[in-house]
Figure 1 (spheres, rainbow, N blue to C red):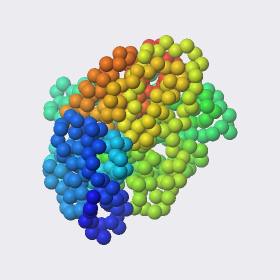
Figure 2: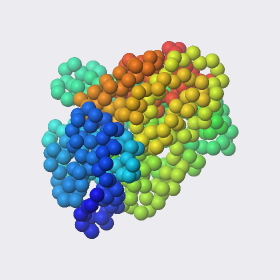
Figure 3: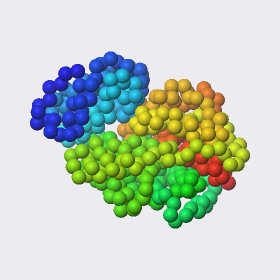
Figure 4: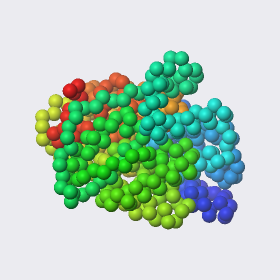
Length: 411
């Protein structure tokens, strides 16, 4: 499609990427069948094709967007199912992220909306504060008004840890992997990283933890400055560690971390460092090796939910399934597994009605499989879909298969 950006606008590398994505789109409509919000709402403005038109008008004019435009762009999950389905290869990610940054800089949201978004970002990016806020929310949820009350009632409890198990010993000279602890997961499910350490150790790798957030929550809410600060911290931490590889067990974070060079495109030195860093970043599912179980697994049939960030964001379809099947687990295929569950980082808090509808649809699809448990590779999906079936991370299952504790056991 044709664009009419001014030459000076295209000096901005982010705008240049967005303009390239716009020119690639031919408005064929293949994306509409894979867009969760379009399937739920049936509004062309809530499809990738419709949002692309809204973003083009907003970005070319370089003016503050209308409330209508913001509403429809806010409803986008950034699941990137449209990017996978697109025959033209439109980089929708570059478009929606640039649009959100433009909105954050030029559009003044209502006071209540500004407060909610700042509060969500403040709490979710700080594990200590999130832990305190979660405990308070469970106590005061019945009396909190409006959206705060609704949000408090959705706060999940921390997942029960599996029985403690020692990390197998490795040689000091073994390959070193830096493992980012992340923010929400370190509070809700610290056992996931513990399992990952044992999986890596059995493969002859030492693990070095790096506390903190990757910055994805901020970036997808248009807070470019905060995201860039976190990205630089992570890159510098890895460079100083001397580790051979970098990993994380949350596929949503891994997808964003691999894209740091685009986030830091305005700063040539940091962009180069980000590109060198990205070459050493591996999702947990990429570093984990397929291996047959070393102990008897009395596991139920498992419905594996592939996170959007793994199959669409990182373009690693089938990786989680292959690992679990190689370990001896019985999997049940979920109908329409390519569709988002509605978690999408902070989306389930900021867009609860749509998120709840997508959750209900995903759970109905899972129930239809007759599976006795749910597995995924992202803490957001596991948390959002929890409640009906035992929900475990693939790291916990692979650890169990390798001799670690049973994640379904109470012991």
